[in-house]
Image 1 (cartoon, rainbow, N blue to C red):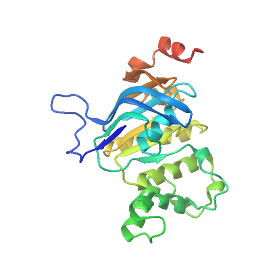
Image 2: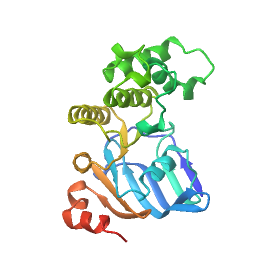
Image 3: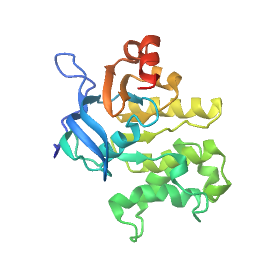
Length: 249
């Protein structure tokens, strides 16, 4: 297994020959958990300054691939190449953060600065300004003193995304960011992700929402831990392909 990082050059959306610039590339990637391999010989590219949707049935490897991209799961073999030197920001599923945690909205967003500052060091004035800006952007500044367990699903999801935005990474990874939300909350989060891409952030999100996947710039389709297709959603998410992918093996 080999993981490579390099200092990024100026970041146009495409190279001089017009090809999309690649933010992450995985080659022959295998990963999983003790006694349970999940990803098998995966070859895929994540375009820079774009939104990429990870789509596939339950157990297809979407969350595992996000974990590998985030650096919280180590590949067992293959190569992971990041065309950047900033750690990714990872937003887990809402269910991964317990309701009983005695955290306010602001304290949750402040955790996004721990990677730069450390969990036990006092935040600087700039850190606090970064947190304020992330909360304003997600429309949750008025919820700063509320406990996580008091929030609606949409408010809680925006709080977690604000934590990711506060990390100031150019790669934002989200696991099922709109699952269980009402249509208005889903639309608000989709609009935010579009804004982040326009501001120079590469977004990758795992989703079961085919409407959200079709609005992405690129799509990776997974089945049984293998790549079943990659490209523009219009080309990948056809009715015939989806029927084939979701059929029992």
